[in-house]
Amino acid sequence: MPLNPTMIRFDVSALTKARLGASLTLNVDTGPQHLVDLELGVLRGTIQAVRVQGGLLVQGTLESQLCLDCVRCLESFVLPIALELEEIFGLPGAGPRPDVTYRVGGDGWLDLAPLLRELAWVATPMKPLCDPGCKGLCPQCGVNLNEESCTCERMRIDPRLAALKDLL
Image (tube, rainbow, N blue to C red; front, side, top):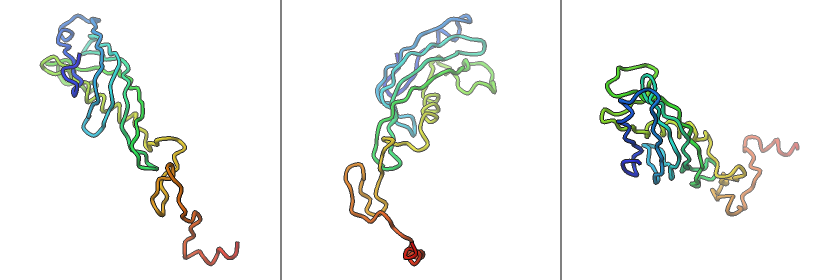
């Protein structure tokens, strides 16, 4: 179980000295997480940590929600996501390896927060929408067109091209 609800850490010290192939199942069920610049909702799932040559292989799927702002209407919304984990964590005391990004702490604790932050950023859409049919904001008066309509003129013509309008 996690050390505390704001951190996603597990004690894997038994695996750091175990034989190759030894494994540990980690159940994740935490409350909302603040990962530096991302807000994740409840985090649930199961992770398998397996002792492999050069570290611990951490695999599993965690389900959560991202708290985002819609790029069209600027309203906050929650986007469900599934984070697929498959990463090798280096062992404490082992020399640096270019293929290992994350490490188990010297105290034998596995901190998943940096990996989850990276995966959550990858899962974040470039242009998050609260709904594919979001109408956005009126560019003239700023009203949220999903909630109400406005009386602004839809066909706005550049004053430099107004003379051409008469030709149509």
